[in-house]
Length: 117
Image (cartoon, rainbow, N blue to C red):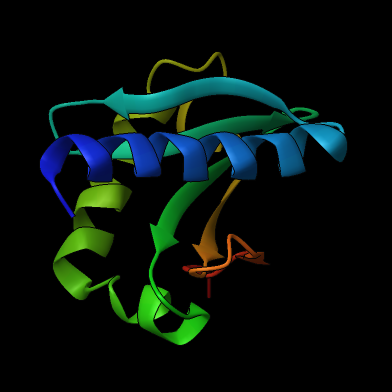
């Protein structure tokens, strides 16, 4: 997939995931937020808490999930900590990491608290 096509496919995937969360009452706090530690695909407000969502698209849900490695998880954690630093409650803000998987047919599977204990 070319760079431009891949970029637009990523934007469309993130928009589809954001719509899914918004339908459940969340609001988008940030999309493609970039900090010094890395980039967060989506940050959603859910009441007083935040949901950090990493969006992965591939031919299947399993292939999409396999694209999330340890180094990327570390970058996501660093970026989320930086984002939380700008919140009124800082690191005490309730937050979780979800992973949204998209397959080749555009189906979405959300794994809630995917990076939690």
